[in-house]
Image (tube, rainbow, N blue to C red):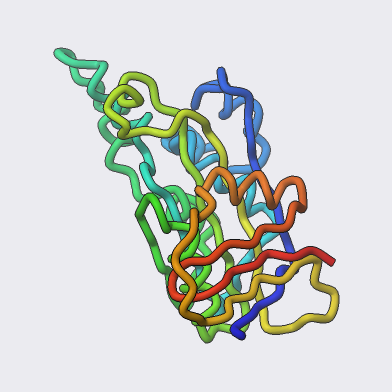
Length: 218
């Protein structure tokens, strides 16, 4: 059994009609004013989820997203034929978690950015469990797309989450465990499913990545 314990959880699940502009108003007090103007919607959501989750210089960050800044890319392409310089800058901005760390001037020992679909949650959790840093911040999310939804290249919902994992069980609110085995792979929770489980403190159990997974709460 490989396991770590969760000592902090925070999620962001805004209304479906929230845009980057409305998120800037809602979350304005959480970011430096100079950085806020160029942050993506996902960057703001991840930053809000990470508000109380500093990894520390010896810590590691595992970041998971399937589509990343798709909405930022959509908005830039929509500005053609008079391409917007500001939307261009936003569309090529560093990833959401990098926006936050750069804005806070926080150094970390290691950053593991992961992208995927079917087994992304397993990939992210396994990376967090095998990471040797004493404090691992697991974070991720998506920003809601529009016309790229028809191409299955965007998320239907905006959301973000953050959790701190350590080997220390004392004071933990939840536990993530993986037991290697020969069971056939079952359905893996999506990133959105995982975020909802964190928000509701709902347990999860499934088989995949060569073993059994479980998320349990104290």
